[in-house]
Length: 252
Image (cartoon, rainbow, N blue to C red; front, side):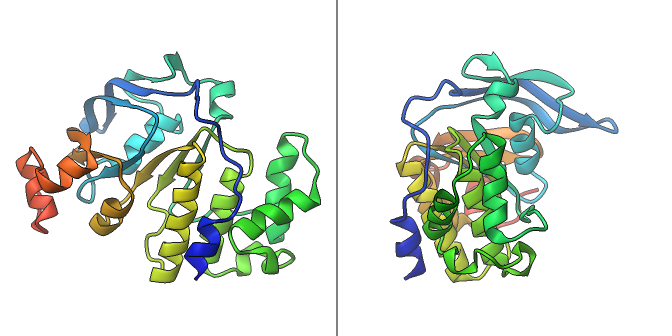
């Protein structure tokens, strides 16, 4: 099966010790047109687990991920990585993959070569090894934009992992994909986690969260409602909002 091949592949990842962690948000606010889209969030994310960010549509999951990554400046509050504000050296230790893959208008292998080249690495053999790790070696010379949706997302993940980031941030990476592609991508994520990469994973899929999460950050209306180990969250959620969400009811 594709998932087994991908999960057992060698993907370069970070070591267990990471100067980037923990990730801390203190009094984090994002205000747009007088509305708090992120509303005074205090949060500490530790190493060691796959952290899943969940909540209803519009809860602020993707916005929080972008604030943590530094793509968006908060209205107020701070984000610290390993006790330090985000800077260039810390940014090089992390990677972000979006819901819709952002790929270069080049071949599949050239997408990997470009990322390695940013660090002065020129190694065609290594490029092919990385593609083999996500079952794309046979598409190496194909234009990346001609891949299927699932293949494009596997390439985006391979490119993100090529330099062994300490933290990998994923924003709904399997949305709208077929089950086989979802299984393959989850296999890549598990392999990266097992190799020592910290995973922050945004999803609206409760089943996926159950499969992957070590701890859950549950948001609603821009507020942090719960942050707890996954087992406790799924069996005994504390908040009414989480109880309603897990029961499949609308959370208002």
